[in-house]
Length: 237
Length: 389
Image (cartoon, rainbow over all chains, first blue to last red; front, side, top):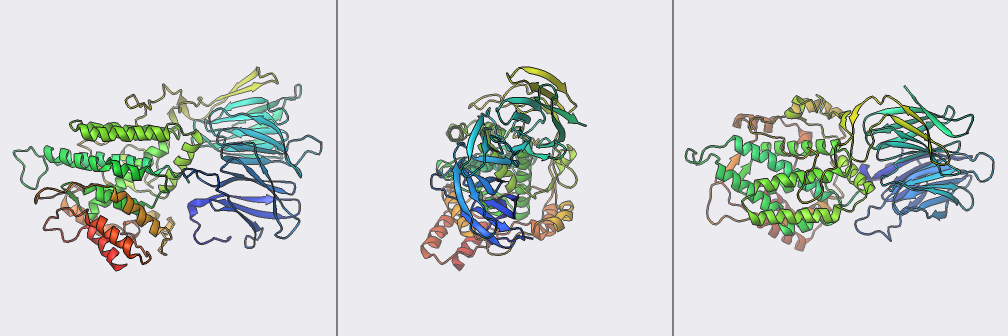
């Protein structure tokens, strides 16, 4: 199922993501050649953005990585650290590159979004990179950088956003939970003995899943303390 | 994919090749005075290792190797090792060369998989180089070549970030994907299952820079710890004792990449078992490979940098058998299934008279004194193909 362009080696396919927008669903693929967007039937390509490798040195790998949708925007991360924001119309192929977000200096690893909670000044997108730096954004006709959470020497391969809580998995096996509005670290879990491969979140029940290269999968229950409002977590057996 | 992966892949595979050849040659060691003309002696063994190592670490060759480039196919790389293995008086039949390459690739795949940190692949490389230096202790010129390569590795990889090493790791693992040849030593040690997959340990020291799993810490707005919970992780991990050394000399701490072969441990590979998995294996594409021309160029550049010493006069070449008997070797050649054989690359390159002349010349320089009983050499095969262009 799905088109396979001749000449695209299997190893070059970076990521695939269903982008669920309010009015349509698009299938987005990234590879070393660029970013491709298809209608949800997987057959009609509506957009192709070739990656600009202009600044890259010969030793630099050129690729796109990290895909997320928020509102009527689709954001895709790149090797340079820049995040490309595409404005998606209700239907048709008239997709435009609306913004290039600067904030990262190393390759983007992952992007997480959640629907805005309805009030102002609410973060609805987090971008992560190879140095472990996290950038917290508010989406809009112009994206606003709300806060930055520095890394500590290891990549952050996976990040999730839920009810104002940022969950970040790191290359040293730790999972950190941050308050999105302040950027403060509230929970630090020594979760895995190897790098974290992926995080996933079940939004209705607030359960976070972490998978690591140590062959283990853990599930965590996220919550807020009734007294302080601080983020809390409990491991599920 | 990372364009800095080839030197690491080549040096580690080369190291494994030398471990295996050293073990096989020692196993067939005959005291010098008692040896017949076609039997291996200690002197022969040292000579073979010296020849191969000096060819491998030749400056021109290393220069080509360290240029930023994509990884090519397993088949393309095998051609380079076959040429390397024949850099001396030693000869290998197809079946033995196949077995050698299988052992080399599975060993390094194991080492990459089990590296605690992505950066530890550099320590694995240093382990190989340390042991290689042990093989050529009596040859100061070759020792210098190896030290020079060491310095190059440190210069290029010493400053890479964790993220860049992670990309290198992924590039290597993709190269080894779907390779599930069973190796008797791994099976006996229970680090490999019967289906050819490696066993990932869930105990032992954590990587340097990682905490032992099992602790949750919670903080308030001021960054003060307000609560602690411990949980059962499921594994049995202990803290890392110390970090391995990345200096020219030092304790690497990591054992991956050290010589796991000893004289009395013949290593078998089992092809028949893995054929059960063939139905689920992705069929290798038989369509013309769009990268074929690049692969050919890559081979030409790499092998152009290889300087094979030509023997001064006619010398007998010795055949090394990686199997226990000649009959076993013949049997292995016959029963090796189609999909797992390493055919010579089928290249449909464009007409390029000058190029093919250059390539023919490079291949011609590799002509090694052939034994009368060998009818063709690998060089002739490739050369013949060039002529057909």
